[in-house]
Image (cartoon, rainbow, N blue to C red; front, side):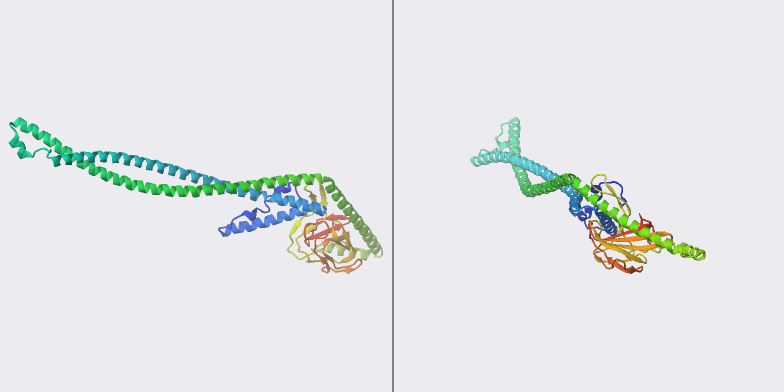
Length: 435
């Protein structure tokens, strides 16, 4: 598989983010979500393809590590959301506490005003009581007629009248003050009752907000703990894989030996094809050889077809494959195509089944010899089959059933692995006209 050198963690970071998205509010958002899911699925297939050829236990260890890594973005998003909700809850609790403090201050002020007002009213009442008692004892000032008749002179009348008027004003002021004091007291009492009700409401709201804040803090802490546990797990799993480096290298060596053996077998088939073609051409006269050359030239189009019907979905392309542990590369000599377990695979062209075998890396394999075409020897290989439907030496025509897609060998899931060999060299099937 041709992949640029990159960390699987970076690829997997988006694999399961979709699981944390909310329901889209519009058709555009839904389309974006579907596209993201498709991209994530493709990335997951690419990651799995990088593990092919490794021992199954190593594959499981890598996949578990990447599964853990893929949970990091969701955990970080959950933590950020929880911390934001905690901040909101704390601000609400602080604002409510400020309102409650202000209400209590206002209540204390009203209580002070009521106390002062009550003292003033009491004093006014005492003044009025004294006036009432004086009136009862006959100690009040004479009326105007009594002042006139009882005054010896005009000056005495004027002085007596001024004193009497002052006392009258004092009595009137006392009555007015008492009336106003009573009105102010009633108003303050109404305010006091309203503020007391508000204080009780704020207390209840404060208690609820404190509970909400504490719950938000607990949720945030839980998400933080989860994130720390994931990071700790990633560290431990990475260290464990590093310790299995020798096992990893041995697994790749085993696969490399298997590939070399397959290359040798295909080279032998090519050699036999060329020998027979040479013998066939030698038996032809000059005119027949010219006709054969013309036929080869006219048959240069798409004579090889894909092993499964289209549309073709490439899950791992032809080319160098970079492994996730260390700077290890291995040639991916075929193309991986999306296919479910049990799907039929067909002969790409007419030919003879060269061999059927089981390989530690490739699983169940069918090699088909297509002989010489346009001057080149061609062999195709179908790998990881769940079932083989042909036998060695059997002649097949293009479109005949070869076997069923599977996941045998060192793979991470069902798919088609199809190889095309031209003159002993693996070529990219996707570059052929028929593909």
